[in-house]
Length: 380
Image 1 (cartoon, rainbow, N blue to C red):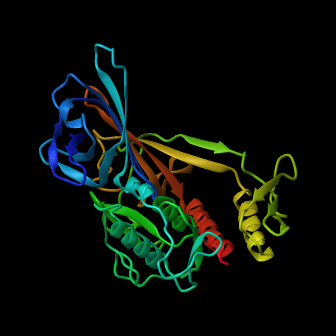
Image 2 (image 1 turned 60 degrees about the horizontal axis):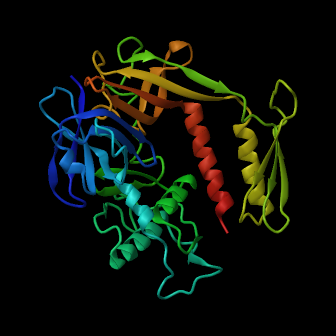
Image 3 (image 1 turned 180 degrees about the vertical axis):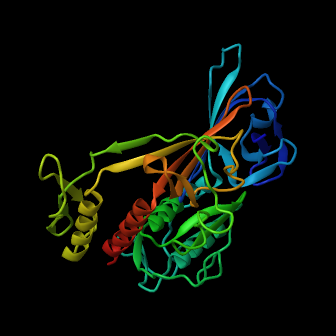
């Protein structure tokens, strides 16, 4: 039987013990973003003393109730708690971001050898995403920040040992935290990342090591309706549709982009985009182009409710966020879909349920195009 449990650890340290009586657990693992954990605990229950002071929480899973594994992205920081001091039940709620949240507590300083330009730490056109992150992480640890974090890439190669591609000079405003910078590099299509250990960050060239295609081969991951998937709701919206976009940048940049072939029920719909830092017509046109291409069709959020009790393939064990799997698509037909987020819950009675946010190949390719154009627009 698939189950989840929580273990408390000292900050950057050793195991404290099992939290045996959580009343509710909810955990979310998004791709290329920070996981989150919420749980409730009675402060009169055994184990409450383990979370009375700052600590880390490890999320473990088991498919048989006997052997337990901590998921590689399942280490969290207990940094927020909420409860009523006069409630006799002593029930408290805990909100815990993934361990990588500590990057918010390390910021960009000026280089000791190069003066900042307009308040920016400037990296040359030859700088890769790995070089930028390695440089700033190393400097932060020299100052004593993010002391518990390890990483498996370096300035030259990604976590698979492949040379970094897509060098791109950029200015990083002084004081920018390193988590914001990491997510910025993701949005530019310069890297993918995930935690590959409790306190270990890995990063790859985009579209490579972080992505697995489990929809093909001799043993594909197939999430079948009625066996693995209990419901497949789609939310379709026309809100972001547009056939024309006006991009406003700096230095009086004004650029229009059109999608002449877009079919809209109410005729021409316009979108306005304000981009600080855009100073060329070419960059503005790139942004406008992706805006109208993205607005040519309704957007779809694909949620798939999953069961743990008759499923052949289980989350965390068999697949994770970032993987391509086969799941019910339009009309319920099995379709290759990218897992964008895995969300799991455990009730007070110990029942585990979950859902997936998925994207089909068209949406996956569209996101890749958006990232590539964002990178082009960001180039100086």
